[in-house]
Image 1 (cartoon, each protein chain N blue to C red):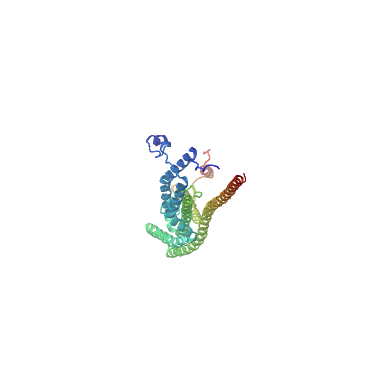
Image 2: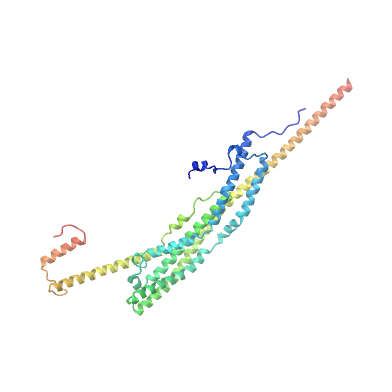
Length: 204
Length: 191
């Protein structure tokens, strides 16, 4: 009959593996546990507010209130600039809130996934908030303002030329609409004006 | 501070190979770890998880869009009034000023309707994305739980089988021993 069996002792490798595992686990709990709890608390941060601030700035900087974001007579006189501004600002705020909420949820799900031992999203989502897409309303309002400014500038140029030529004619003892230049001089001036206007060389 | 410098300060780790913790009963240490991990989860993350599960019915974007449109209209109205004051009325006739007011009103209503509609779509997108992520996490948790339970069940079945087999072996041994004893007695009596 065989002798009573003795319980087998763990091998050195087994003991070392268990010791290292315990040390690693303690280290993980002490160092990574607090970080994950901190991430959990930070993931509640209202990123929408950050985005909305940025969206407001984008609206102001878009030139919708006037060139360079400054108040302008042109914007004050416009019938629909103010309505366009309100519409663009509201749609940008909504877009910011959307992207902010997306980023917040992404963070929260990442924290939960890590806490539950699942895959984590390695992104803070802040980068997304920083890149708020310009909404259609803001782009349209901006385009309208650019067109309005271009129209005003063109009108100003025409008026300026009208005044300058008229006053030149008057100074040369002609009428406001009647110049004192000969046909040749006139064609030379026109040619010069064409070259200047198109930025070409070859002025006479 | 580089990792090498940090190592030099002695603050790199409390454990070196010479003072690693000794584990005499890995099974009970493992059981304690599992229990403590679950306690930590319940304490630190259960509430957070429940909050996130409820977030799939979130309506904050729609609510915000409803609040934002009138607020922005009010703001634009203020800007317009200040600009007009700054330029002494801007040379606008009464009719033009009235038209400005009407454009504001129309714009405000259109913006409110458009933004709320967009917010509904965006809200659904966020909520569905959250739900999809939660389902993924849930699937993983479920898989882990099933795996752990499967391991426990197969270990219990193995133990039971080993017990049965040991019992049968013991019974066979006893029977054999009895046979040997019986045959020895018989031989002694017959000699």
